[in-house]
Image 1 (cartoon, rainbow, N blue to C red):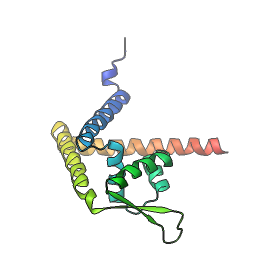
Image 2: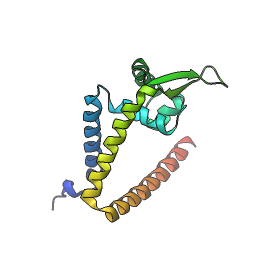
Image 3: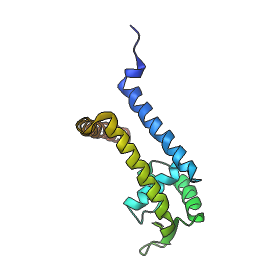
Image 4: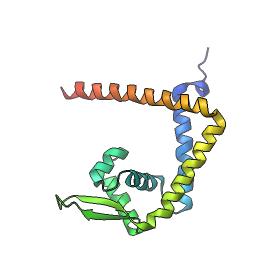
Length: 153
């Protein structure tokens, strides 16, 4: 019997994530930005003062990619690079006041997405899904870290 990919958990996770990314891309483009720029702004709101290398590790891209994204954000007056007080070779990234409306748009998008999830699943199922996804993420991180340690030895 053929496997139904539409009900396969791996395909469903991928498709739901893809649909969320697609919608975020559309919303970001509406403001002349990219989802990747939104991600940088969101991380800087959560963890201000990150270096480009630290931010690259958080968003799992190469430092040069973050540098280019930050160049564009800086040109729009949304982000400012400042020298690290302990090591002037390192530039720390800080949000500018002009980032406020963009961050409000990101929060609005996230609230709409959360509302859609709540409507589709209900509160209890959403809590269960969140707990299940967290458990899955934890397990996958452990497997990945174990594989990395084995490859390094």
